[in-house]
Image (cartoon, rainbow, N blue to C red; front, side, top):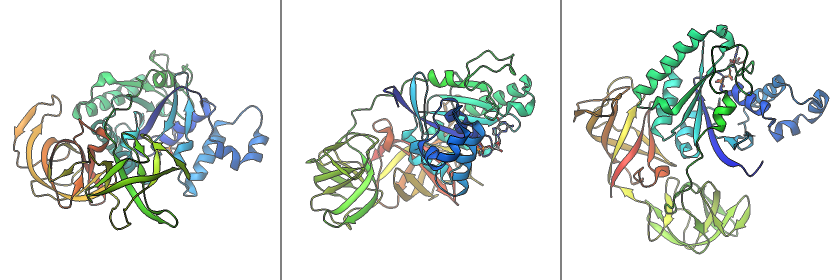
Amino acid sequence: MSDEQHQNLAIIGHVDHGKSTLVGRLLYETGSVPEHVIEQHKEEAEEKGKGGFEFAYVMDNLAEERERGVTIDIAHQEFSTDTYDFTIVDCPGHRDFVKNMITGASQADNAVLVVAADDGVAPQTQEHVFLARTLGIDELIVGVNKMDLVDYNESDYKQVVSEVEDLFKQVQFNTDDASFIPISAFEGDNIAEESDNTPWYDGEILLEALNGLKPPEPPTDAPLRLPIQDVYTISGIGTVPVGRVETGILNTGDNVSFQPSDVGGEVKTVEMHHEEVPKAEPGDNVGFNVRGIGKDDIRRGDVCGPADDPPSVAETFQAQIVVMQHPSVITSGYTPVFHAHTAQVACTIESIDKKMDPSSGEVAEENPDFIQSGDAAVVTVRPQKPLSIEPSSEIPELGSFAIRDMGQTIAAGKVLSVNE
Ligand code: GDP
């Protein structure tokens, strides 16, 4: 890897539209076949030889890992272009893709949306675009994939583009922030080289579009926020909460507070990759030890922050939500489970304050009786158990959530304000 700027990229889209194939294609075209694939198949790889890997070979090995149920190690899916080092943050084909996208949303800077030319906008296309929009991905590259299956036909391409544009309008996503490219992940058209099969297209190819993405926002000077993923007891050390630093810095010697458990103390040690470190930064996964904190004092879903600027605990909060899929209607009193950072808490939608017009973003109705799939609304929410959450305008990483019910994600949202 070079010293180039880093981009965390999500590859999103409906199942079977070609996300994994596109990842394989990008790794192949940029000469970035994961190390562990080479390691595991060294002999075979050497036999296949000097001319480099065949695309099919790369795909076979990635597919084999998936079939074995091995989670493709996302940390290894990296490739570099002229401008950026990319890490693929959402693992296509992963069972918890949507949940990862929510809890790991702050990790993705940008996304490639894959839509198959022979199928068009499908349910998960909608779901992923809703999520990407709500969770703050600003720029989307749309790969209209499988162009080979529609004989590289321009009108089929245009049909899919217009379907996707309609979807963008529904979620108030500015089409100017999206680029559309006719591709075939399988055949390699318009990925690393301009394709002769699409003479009617004179826009950017995929690697150019990736190079042209805006650089990620520099880290904010927000205070420390470290949602706790797990709490371990390690002999010789004691209680070790683990999690990822979302914002701010965690230093040895800091006085920290865990909310909503409302306990705190001085940080004795910080560990990363089994080594003691003096401090941890945003993006770092750490285990740490705090003087006087026992295993039963804190739990998953707590957020660790500075003792003098602790994470807020919401009595109620106001949020903007987008309803993605709900079999009937949502009325006040509805109490589904909210997933925010590492917390899962049942919350009651106490009132539906406003319904927004999806195309203009203007208030369409004050205090509507109900909302349903496709609606955007401002709601007031009361957590049934203490929940640490922050206004998205102050700490975006701690200000988004998904609403799940009946085993699926029914809505996603952003926190507007918190009533402590
Ligand atoms: P995912 O579920 O979105 O990750 O989709 P996959 O990458 O697993 O692809 C699903 C199927 O579509 C596989 O059989 C692929 O070989 C095929 N496929 C993917 N991209 C293309 C393409 O550009 N052209 C054609 N003809 N088939 C493709």
